[in-house]
Structures are given as C-alpha cells and as structure tokens.
Amino acid sequence: MIALGIILMIIEFFAGIPLLWTIGVILLVIGLALVLPGSLGHAVGGRRHHY
Image 1 (cartoon, rainbow, N blue to C red):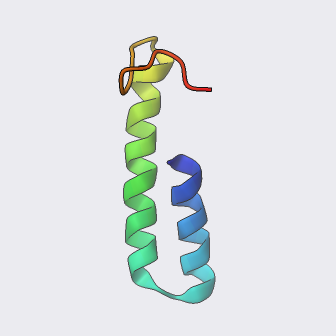
Image 2 (spheres, rainbow, N blue to C red; image 1 turned 120 degrees about the horizontal axis):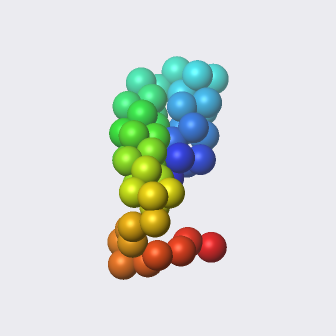
C-alpha cells in the first residue's frame, strides 16, 4: 500500500490529476498505520508475517 500510494503521488505530480494525490495520501497513511502494529509483532489482517 505504501508503494502504491507513492506511485500514485508521483503520477499525479506529472499528470496533474488532484484525485490521484488524495488517493495516494490515503493509501500511504493506511499503509503506515498497518506497518506500525506489524513491526511490533501483532497480527495484521489475520497474518503474523507478510512475505
């Protein structure tokens, strides 16, 4: 999710579509919110490890 958010933000920078920036920021924040409990060892989305 973090990578997709960053990619959408970069595409918006070149294409000039504001909606992509908003979606990119939302995906980035959700991705970071899921990384935090995952890095602390808690299961996220029913999985303890993501490969």
